[in-house]
Length: 614
Ligand code: NDP
Figure 1 (cartoon, rainbow, N blue to C red):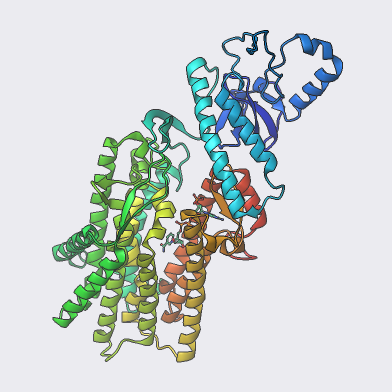
Figure 2 (figure 1 turned 90 degrees about the vertical axis):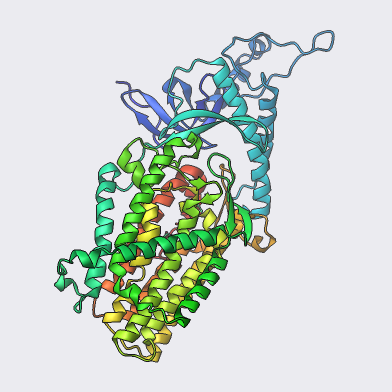
């Protein structure tokens, strides 16, 4: 078997399949059995190339120098090599002033054959020579440069595609490395060009693939039930594990199911109210932008008014505490049914509306991750709705139930300081999320992940019933806090909140409008994908400052429960694992999206979440 000539990571010239166009590409792998090199073009395209189509970076420069010095005469009489890496021969005019052109073979596709492609190349070259040598540049110049480059790239991409599809029978794999693609045609409304849009079939599976997600799907509901059972015990310690087996009555109540369904429908009704502005989400992978009505905060105010009215009419909110397990099981059942519905309907939607990660062909995996990216019933966006409303607002109501239960069970006139802190911190977190509802439109959940069991369960069960564990725990395990300790915890939560909010707002504002004058002080790294990466401010501190702030707050929520048991710290432990895993997922996706630029970012901002630690 021939030895491989190029090494992984090496920059080389790669032939664009079917043409004589060579581009600078990076070798990302080599398949011994097929003897194909995996390469990545600067625009992010990944292909497999034969060795004969890969040349050293200086190959054309050497050939050019050689041909100039050794055979000037020959070069005058023969046609020049048609490599795009070479400078072009000046076109000669015939006696009538028309350009003469040597006939070419059909498969010799040249950039000078296609005037638009030639133009695009010139523009790209001009742009690249004018760009600053430093890797970090002022955001305004970079964004302008980026948008110009992108316009040319879109045109170039289209022309390349036409060349490839129209004229050539390809000898090798034109599929991107990690994905199988079914090609569907659609017209982009913005530029009226026909562009090939591709429905991606997932090849790379997360969470341990089929087997991993199968176990996770059983483990998660079981964990919720176990945590609630343990928290309700007098001795909520690991030593008392496992808790006594619950009776069926403790687990199931049709009333609780009714309450849960009514709550969900009430929230849906509030979502449909024609109040609040309608905004556009960020462009999705298929080029579309969806519209969203932003009225979660108004919905919350209406909920608060409804709760106030209920309390005024002496409705006993401690019912929520005493039925928490039954409510959680109802929510589990509901999320399973919703996931089944989502999976079934995903088979009817156009291919380009499927999520990149949830279309693997494995039922169990796709059911878990979610096949459809943004399922909608008319304008009702199911994922967007579930992300912030029934679960997040439900969490506040559950906490409030615990607050009343604490007063009732401990015979208090007022809630304990610990309970007030937990309720207030988490209320602030929820209000913040609802107030900044638009910020969710740029998150991984909305832009990248499909809507399946993972998110329905997370939104409707995990968030409201696990995140409220501290308040639930305090009902049965009072912890008297002194004011100095309380003030220290408040300070910690405030620091966490400032980092969390500052980082999320900065990125959100930048993604929505990179030209915002308020962000002019930021340094950025432009990327070949068009978007830029912020490399100063919060995002120059660590690579996920928002996760850092979130984790500091998570700790502040657990501390009011004291140090007697580990269960109130379950949230902060789990959340650290979740965000470390999430950061790794995001990192993989960003490296795929931004390639070299992401590596530069990582070199400049060395720590992922915790400065000087991780
Ligand atoms: P982020 O909001 O951190 O978004 C990650 C994306 O931001 C990347 O994919 C990239 O997308 C963009 N990005 C990354 N680095 C930069 C940079 N330097 N400059 C500009 N853009 C950059 O991800 P999440 O959706 O995970 O988190 C959102 C918030 O939700 C966080 O505060 C997190 O803590 C919180 N969260 C809370 C959870 C909970 O259960 N309480 C669970 C999960 C998250 P692109 O370039 O495509 O824009």
